[in-house]
Image (cartoon, rainbow, N blue to C red):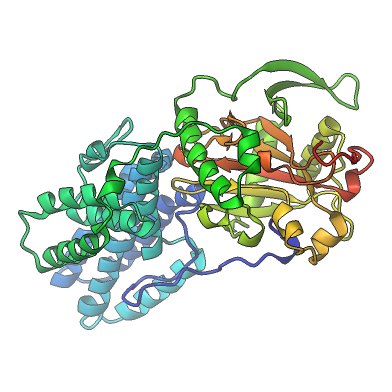
Length: 518
């Protein structure tokens, strides 16, 4: 559980020693931030081009730099007019690779070759680096690794064939085949994730692709990967023939199983449900019943779709307007920072993966206050935010990154309560998270479903809708059936806004019952 009053985010990504560009916060974990990179690169190109106007054309090194910039300008022109293509992980990976590697080469050429012979150039490159640093969104080698990891994770979880990727195809997107360098990054990512079988197939393709090259760097890269893969493959061949399918256990069976076995089963079910949700024709899960939901205002009703009855999960349609969504995104964008987790309170902490950035929005603007009031009207649960004994938490607005994912977890604080860890002011004063309200602030072309592995329920994101469920039984105990997860975003830019409603302010609206299983 996040504590919005005491958030501590990782402010910087550690740069490699050889990196010639400024060290800034990670970018790959927010697709919307990545969409701003082409325009930032255009401004950087303009700075270099304007400065080179003052350099004599007879200088050979300056001419080489002009040629590099011209090529970068051509690539930039293709993407700056249509940044939505960055929603494709392959295009995003190549954008990050270009910004990291090609611009490192530009700065190196400027520092090592041009600066010694052209006065003022060193001063220019230093001031340009400082300018980039102030922008706080230029990618690093860590982002390049993260982008490659996203591609591998998507292929592995969704059982996608790597053959089209090698030819430069990702779903319906077609581009140039992967280079040996790009394939090296992807193979390393598979090894890092522990997907030995994926890495074995990718490395075989890399050896074939690199056979015609005799460069020392290429040969060294392949040899290092061969040695790492050889060590890991010992005793692992049988894993390459594993079967991902398992019979779906019942909720009662899983609830009675030891914690570790339940974690493993939940994770397997999570993978299965993500694959099914991508193929499903129904937009919002089971859709067992649709009705008009009454509110405290007699004439105000909302379209509702029941996804699951016991426990109750419902999706409300058309509950937030495009203008309200735009306002919430605008208020959040400048505050986004990489998501962090207190893993001790997550039931499946060992398997938890999160690729997103988040910001906290309090009810200080008219728009945010209005959408919170709407939550209160629909649920009849208090959304008041107080310094003490708060009834609800501020909105946690999330923008997911490349392959954006949130592994199986619970919103309730069942685990820290079981461990006796309830000493934080937020827990002590406000109790557990009674319920979750989740606004979907964007459409997602493929992937990104919210799934409940133990219930067989799934919700595919649609802009303007909201999901609602209770995290606790009527007895006040955490409901382990409510474990849920966000499937990896296969293609798209996913935005959500979570509102957690606390026990203390809602004890009379949803009173506790004495029976421990209700």
